[in-house]
Image (tube, rainbow, N blue to C red; front, top):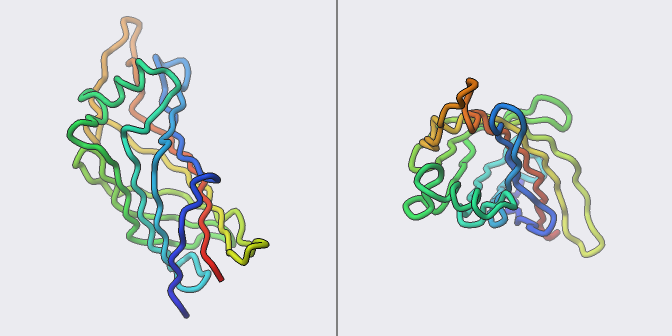
Amino acid sequence: MATIKWQLDPAHSEVLFKVRHMMVSNVTGEFQTFNVTLETEGHDFSTAKATFTADIESITTKVMQRDNHLKSEDFFDLKNHPKLTFVSRKIRKISDTGYEMEGDLTIRETTKQETFKVENTGLIKDGSGYYRAGFSITGKIKRLEFGLKYNPALEAGGVVVGNDVNINADIEMTHPE
C-alpha cells in the first residue's frame, strides 16, 4: 500500500482548550496558528504517524490581558518556548471510527507521554478530486506537569486556575487522488 502524506486544511480545523477558573467556571481558549502532518498507509488510519505544532503567540481567549498572561513566564513563556509539539508514537483502533493516539507532548521543553481519543468523523472524495478526512480529538492534560506554574490559592479554598486542561480539536486533512 502506498504512503499518503495528508495536508492540513486550516480553514476547517480548530484546536481548543478549557480550564477551570476560580473553581466555578471554565475558560475556553484556542490556538489560531498550528500545523498537523499526517502519514498513513493508504486510508488505514491505524497506521497513522501524526505531528502537531502550535504557535504560542497565536493563543487567544478573547481577553488580551489574559492572553498576555498566558504568554508570560507564569504559563507558556513565549519568549523562551514559542511552540508546543505533539508527536504520535502509537495509534490503536478501538472501534469502527475510534482510535487512541499515544505520543509525546512537549510544552516548555518538558515532554510527557499523553493519550488522546480520536474519532474519524468521515472520509470523502470531494468535487475537486481531493480526499478529505475529518478527525475529532479529545483529551486531558495536567498543566502543572509541564511547568505552567501559576497557581495562587483562593481565600475560600481551591485555586485560581485548575490543573486539568481539556483539549478538543477538530481537524480536516486532505490529499489529492
